[in-house]
Amino acid sequence: MRLKRAVMPVIGLCCMAWVLAGCALLPVEEGELKPPLVEPAKEILNLYTVKRSNIAQQITGVATFASDKMDYLFYSESGGRLKQINVKLGDQVKAGDVLATTETSDLDMRVKLQQIAIEKLKISLQQAMAEKDGDDPDIRMKLLDMESAQLQLESLQNQLQNTRLTSTIDGIVTFIDTLQPGDQVVAYKQVITLSDQKQMKLVYTASSSNDLGGVEVGMDVTVKIKDKTYPGKVVQTPLSAPPNSNKAIQDKNAKAIYIQVTGLPPDVVIGNQADITIVTQKRDQVMVIPRAGLRNYMGRDFVQVLDGESRKEIDVEKGIVAATEVEIRKGLSEGQQIILNN
Image 1 (cartoon, rainbow, N blue to C red):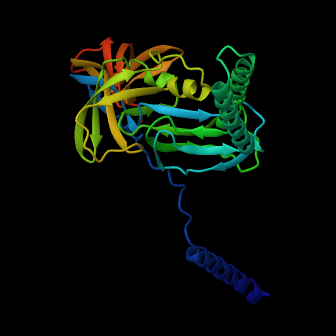
Image 2: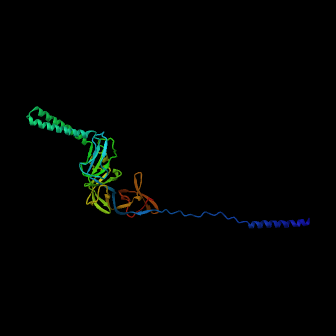
């Protein structure tokens, strides 16, 4: 028993030593790391220094040479059936050429028969005049028959002529309707258009008449053809266009300007194109900023300027608005820095 009592404390001390040694082998837990301090990112501003410059409002685009003299061919009566169109786009024609025909039925034969009948009446009249006095009733009757036959022939010839579309000018075919042989023609509907190549103007057609604001008759135009420039003048605008009963022409004139070009090279023909520039407004040495600097909200025009480290809004009055720049009439001073829209 004494031995047992002496051994037990020793065993207890050994166990405690073993436990303490095991705890020493375990990894020591680290404390929770504090998040790193992040500096706020500096806002990068796109700045522009206000300065004076020249500014111009201009219209640029591609215009096409078209004839200044055109002949629109159409039938004056409906109901006829198209027989044949004798030309194609780009064909050169002469005045008097028959360009299209409708079915004539037996009109050709009736005209020929009437011409024969008139020839017979002439022979009969000559015989009567050789045998009788000029006051003889028989001669008077034959003269009336002759006059009647002549009127009938003219009527038939007019009917025959109405089946043909005939060119009234020397020119080039620039339009042909999609009518096919056998289709009925409609009165006053354009079938063929002829253009006189000797009389040309440059035509610029915009998307709408609003795009031509500020253009007036007499304005100078810079015309560029194959890297060479030629002077031009505006000779017609939508406001100065003459009235026309043709709706297609009315619609075209409502959004087109016509330009007379001086010194054109001889190889320019209908359908050729040219770059045009028309300056509608111009001011020199005025306050100008990029359009990206002008802001608008509910009809209010303003800019943001850099005031120390902060932004400041200033109301402005704009003037000429060009493609990439805008004139500022009031509100800004030269040297101020404005903030551009990103």
